[in-house]
Image (tube, rainbow, N blue to C red; front, side, top):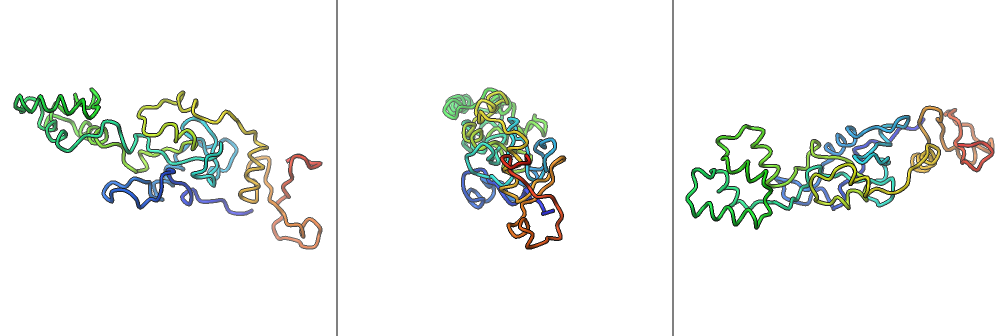
Length: 241
């Protein structure tokens, strides 16, 4: 039986090299974050968990198909977008951190104008106007995330079918129904997934079907392998896969 692929070896978020972006706030997930992200995704019943997972929209994806656009392809997505529409300027954040009660009237006017210019959400504006000194630590964390977007860490990572990820883009709070609407309108049977797995990995590992692709020499009886795993067969053969 051949070994399965490691989930940390493939993937990306479809936007370039992991080395790009601010070094203090990397744009892309590193290998460790990707590995954890893959591992926490829902498993596909009856299929090898290092080869197959379900994305956040319940689409089946194959670990080897990272950053392509097919219906079994996937990308690593920031659950809270890395770049948000309400990114704050440092000047606005500094003013808001002080809280309205300590502001002069001209500072309050500046905050109102800058808030609309930055498309600031009412929730974030409400948190910030209270001032950091009166916030609980979890509110402070929410402010940071809501101000500057999500971080490239495992806790903010999900796998998404590539088409879903490209459609989601930097939109926040996209629900499952919307993501399913972005998904490929096709569902694969177990036998079809077996064919893909056989083509990609050279074997199939699942309950009820454990097989490998044998060589021509083996099938002609010219070579006998120590691996006695049954030979995989295509559906059009006399025996179904």
